[in-house]
Length: 338
Image 1 (spheres, one colour):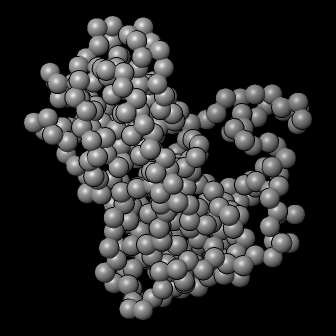
Image 2 (cartoon, helix red, strand yellow; image 1 turned 180 degrees about the horizontal axis):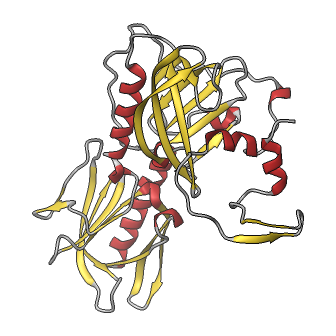
Image 3 (cartoon, helix red, strand yellow; image 1 turned 90 degrees about the horizontal axis):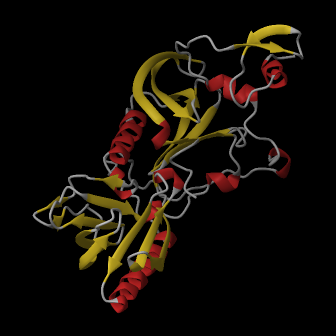
């Protein structure tokens, strides 16, 4: 399950810090302060094709993972850093699980804009390559019955005479099977189409339907949980397509193509591409501890909000605002230093 680009996590484990299959390190900055949550603490910012990872040098357990899909806005902001004083920093506003978090990163090496150019550049590349990762219905993907190929895409086969069984009468169209997605479009109307990346496929099966044997492709819950049925005659051809699609899906699962391309121009010569993950003592790692309330509170975005519903608290014997999901009175008290 891909979570790296779709979640914001705090104090992540060494396993969560490792690159998943298809994830690549694009840039590393070894002197970056997490000014919002860990002011005065020097750390490393790792920029991958899916997320930003920050960890403290002095205590590697103190870390962040910010997925690009959670980012609402990136800009620069003048801040007062404990390590650099009044300076320009990178401000990132995110939203994860209905909660807004903000992050401020300050590059502790003066006279360099590498923090801004790398993060903003990779984020733009991520946003412009969503066709690799997201299901698309009725998109401008076909022109004159030809697929508009993505930069890292390769067509493996084209199958004519494919009936889409989404309506009672069916629609005759064409399959285009590539290394990153399955595409179907109607022969009579190119705009009636679907682009389904392998990343969003939950299963590919051949089973009986009211139209006879059909190829059934189910998309993930994250993409809408669609169940798509296709009929291909003769049955032997149907099984051939199923075999090819299953094979390409399995290959993709082992080595996904996320489509994010970014070339770093101002990277110092001789800098290594390898990711040296910090060593953590066993005493530092407590797998039973989830995102604690005090960590979350440090990054909550200060925005306008409407008053929440008033409820009676049996614990306090008072009327209070209804707590946000995931919070208890006990965790709120833990935010206050003892």
